[in-house]
Length: 150
Image 1 (cartoon, rainbow, N blue to C red):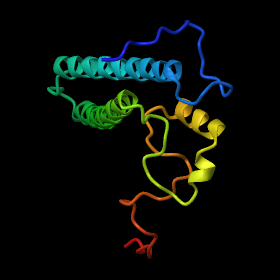
Image 2 (image 1 turned 120 degrees about the vertical axis):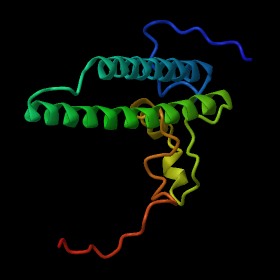
Image 3 (image 1 turned 135 degrees about the vertical axis):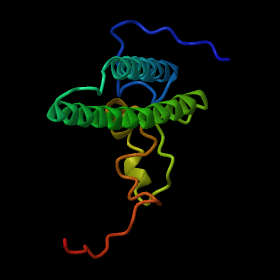
């Protein structure tokens, strides 16, 4: 295990320093870990709330409203669960020192290689593994004919 770099409380990555140096990696590690902890705390609170709330409401309207609220809450937690897996993947990229570099080759790699662009991308989307200019994903569907609504 590598020694962790200590950061001053006011540290923010700078474009003047080397891209993804140990201080920047530690900054993003701490940012991702705190975000992950916050998401896990929220999900624990949701579980407690769902256990305490009863669906045995006498009024049908109240019951329907409660079921709708639960469905929305569960959908939100599912999105957060997926986000936690992306955060975990970003943390593993930090450990392998590949964090901050685009995982997907692209014809626009030279543009994505700009220090300023990479630095801003990491700060705005710390879980991302691709540059903003890496093009469509292999899993995205090609544009096709839109079927009319029936």
